[in-house]
Length: 249
Picture 1 (spheres, helix red, strand yellow):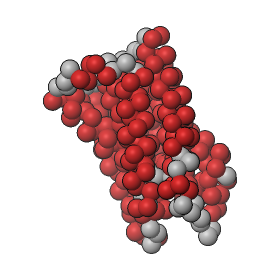
Picture 2: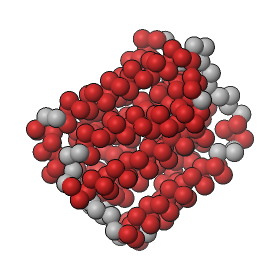
Picture 3: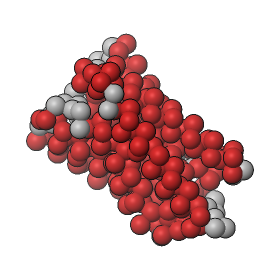
């Protein structure tokens, strides 16, 4: 991850504020409000299951990034540096899906409700385009991207979908049902940061502060979007595009 300049930090903070504002504005859509909120019959039990699964992902991340080969991938950077995160994201999606099948719960209970898919995609695309504009990357993208950069976008999208399915789709609604919306948002964001910590600690010293800042901001914003939109697609699209813009620096 590159070390951000002051101007780039200003662009990132502007992006965050813009995404929050747009999500609040579009989140009052009648199509979103027409879908009843998710309710769990046994919220405490559901919350504990979510905590167990996310805690397991944190342990898997610690084990994976402790391997010398994985550490070398991360430190080399480029597209290859994304592969460890992609493998963990695939495991996150697999764990979420297995839990749904084993516990006979619908996809909607992991943030993949069909009724909210279209508005979530619309909001995700809207905030993604806003990010490009506020980060001053529009003209650069109009000039074209390389095959490696296009590949990075696809990998980052897959990573975001897997991670968001577990932490925002499966975990956050269960914690919100048990502890309340704000507590569920903040706790799931904290667990997500813990799962990312082993990777950040492998970055060069000068890049770690940037890594921590970006992860905390992305986690809080993604959780906020999940609160308002209630579908994984919106925060996943935001994180993929925002992360890609960082990759292009």
